[in-house]
Image (cartoon, rainbow, N blue to C red; front, side, top):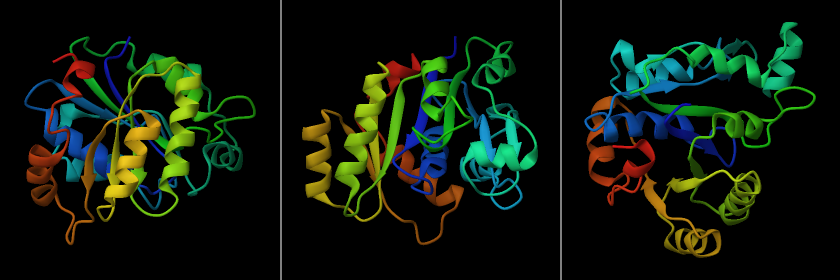
Length: 222
């Protein structure tokens, strides 16, 4: 059984990868962290694992680069079909079965919680199989309340623990308040759009502003 956090989002491109890298900065001093993206599409254009390695300032042992790696930046089910292969939730589990038990995982999903992996399974099925508490990354802009509440409802319908929400973009106090109130969930941080996004910029911000109250420590078992 893995221990750690699963990073999901209300949409694709919302900021999951940057949030994962930020969590590496925030909590590596407290626990032996390892980042893993089990399913990645569009690998020829965007390698999220490489991005986290760079933005998170990760050592080699902090990156686990195994899983479904598919060309074309489309939904996993379609990427696999076009590639002549298939994604199966159960096939992901043996990949990490032999990893050290003290490792705390930062696992990043592909797209949102209901993105299809195959004709029967969705991303949320992988999340349920791993059973990790979830951090939801949401935009701060108009429309985020509905998208975030729908995501929270889907997660809770599978009895998945929601550890918190990270909002990305310009600060929007009203949207933050609405998500916390109607979603019954803490907003762990409001992550800005960095002028120049580098490990040197992300690290200090993460340590100072991400999860200031240390809420995620209990979920990382530190």
